[in-house]
Image (cartoon, rainbow, N blue to C red; front, side, top):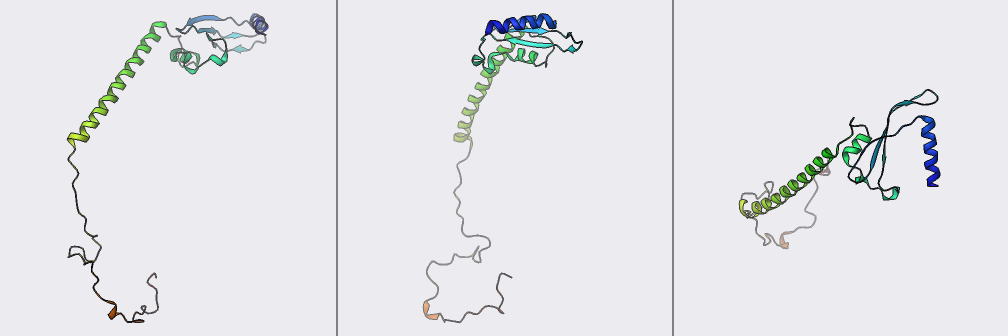
Length: 169
């Protein structure tokens, strides 16, 4: 079926006046083509097409990083001119330098955080919290743990609610 598709594409290009111009090749072996704007047999103007032929012909073998970002930008029309091999290699070198610098920065940050935790910060202060400011005995002597009264003074039924109202209202 592969040879029949190629034959059909070649026939279609010859009838539709599509002419593929080879624009460039990347370091992975992918080939990039441009089909300039043209008028088809019905008189319609067809806009420019940008095509990539992957080095791996099988779609299953294609990975997202197989096309360099510069060529991806050209295919998606975010840049007008196709990239040069020197530009791609320069940008790749720059990306590697950024990776190394970021890794060094990360490692220095880890070392500094260890130093600040060990040397620069004072030891935590031990404080004693005695009661709460809203407690009736705040600032005074703590109430004793021993009971202050005995059960001998308790009178059953001695407590009465105020005016029959609950304290929630």
